[in-house]
Length: 53
Image 1 (cartoon, rainbow, N blue to C red):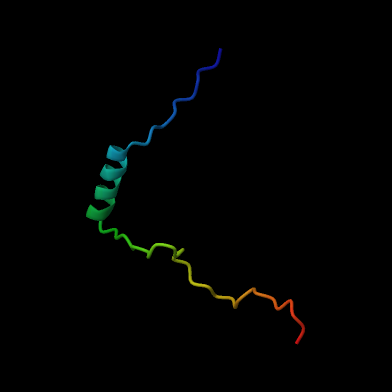
Image 2: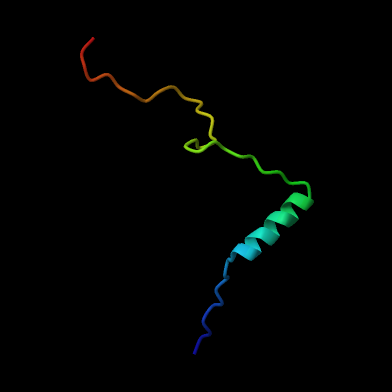
């Protein structure tokens, strides 16, 4: 018989602890406005014009 793998459980408390440790070690958090991905688009628009010129 093989042993079942132990699942890691993520809790609010563990996330808060990890975040606190990250900030203590000099890390920083960048807040992104709701609806934005935070990615900078390097390419132009991908829209196409279906109406003739």
